Image 1 (cartoon, rainbow, N blue to C red):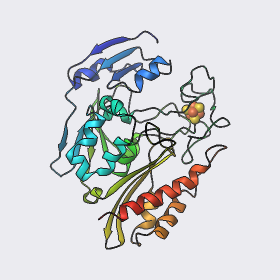
Image 2 (tube, rainbow, N blue to C red):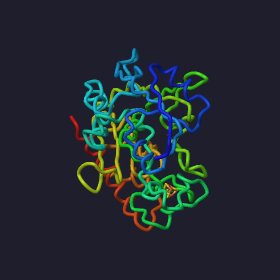
Image 3 (cartoon, rainbow, N blue to C red):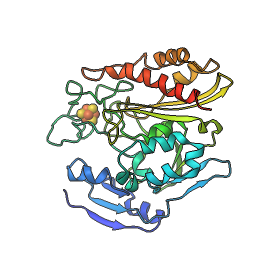
Length: 329
Ligand code: SF4
């Protein structure tokens, strides 16, 4: 591990001031991903600012009936909170499908947003070709073992996937990320928070290095109570998604009035399935409708030597998740 300085701060303003203009510094929350990456030499910050004592653990109702989740709320606390379980079950299910109970007790919402890909080549500094870890070095996964990699939105620079389950649910729910930096506070819509790789795969998000995530706001969506998270993975627990689907439906009798759908495990960022939502709007909530919509969403998908199975898997997962939601009382 490289040498680094460590300090602990007590309020958000002090945290932002401490890392202002220091792109090599990092905020330390639960540390469940960052510390692993530091031990392996993938992340090499020269300064860690421990934010665990900041008053950012609240989960509270907003005046418009939305919910604000503090950036330091632990994943377990969010998953088990009554407001989340009753109004946004898709988020509770997504959180409970991720990691292990011990990790969920440590991991924070802000840290979950900033998880880095689990691409094997990214995690091995001895491997020379990884544009995300070392810009300009190439991409080992393109012609390597790419079973867990992206089928949508990828570039010839990087085909990594985003690992978070929580973020797939937040994408479907149109969450808003509130951040604080040296110039003040701003809000980032969830669709603009994470990035596709393009020519800059080293950048996962549009967050500046010295900006602190303070909360995630969930808008009031009455039909989000009718929602589900489906995760398909190699083993029943403690595994990342090969494909996942977050889905919510507003039904009038058996007709779709509105839908929210997002996919995980298929792209560099949580993939909002806008084509599915548009295709099923106004139609019968049945398997034929869902399958046609899944075909439309995956029409542009591209597989590689070891991950082409994900294209059909994603289509089936979309049908399965939407059918599950449609069958809810
Ligand atoms: Fe690196 Fe991305 Fe290629 Fe993986 S897919 S080796 S993270 S550039």
